[in-house]
Image (cartoon, rainbow, N blue to C red; front, top):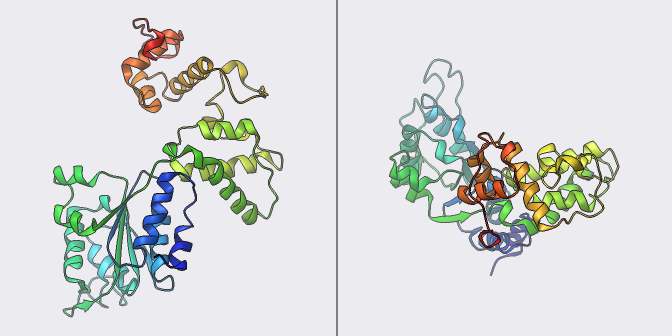
Length: 338
């Protein structure tokens, strides 16, 4: 049974959806075990937060070291990971421990591990196999006990197939896989997350911010959130700051979000009810998708997550050809096809 500490760490993950509940449950289950975990998810889904929660469920007083793999350079990767002795190369004026030795007894988190070069992958694999490091300029191996967590928004299996990522390293990292859901698949969590960010920002700014209007919340819930939870956090902060003490409405949201349910004729008008007829909502979403993609129908269809053929038919049905890049016309569509 998970300990109180494990449950508390998992509770840092906000949301009531089944997908988020599954993430919390897995954190509580594996948190105190030192197995390697590969955290997968789109950008902004909270991979580092999950990594920290896993660490805190184990030994929160031990070191937690984050390594941004995109910043590791081939020429310095051994020094960055394993450290170096004084005078081992030009500019090495003093001894350094390196990321892995700094994490000794705790957790090292390789963020965006898919960005590692093949050369850096080989060096990381050697450490995972031997659990020792040899600082640059030294011949003495140093044994380390450290938990390894890794995260990426890339498809590592596809990278393995394309020989861009070592298969042996993939299996070393992927002892347990933790897949994070996209925010657009957990829309019921948006109001709860907004409350969380609202409370946090009220404390940080030392201001008593007003809560969102129903119209603004409807737009937050309708937006597709390509940047996931990180984008939502920024949108909430933007709205609270711009509203300047008033209840944030649609006009206070970032433009890309505030226009999701608004047609040009409604700009500047506050609607009494956020709910619109389904046909009207479809047209408005099509218009917004075309505006965001500058009339590129393929990109707009992808944005709405529907097939291109169906998108073309909807464009024709709602007479939106003038908003497309090509101004094309397609065959008619029946209600049964929608």
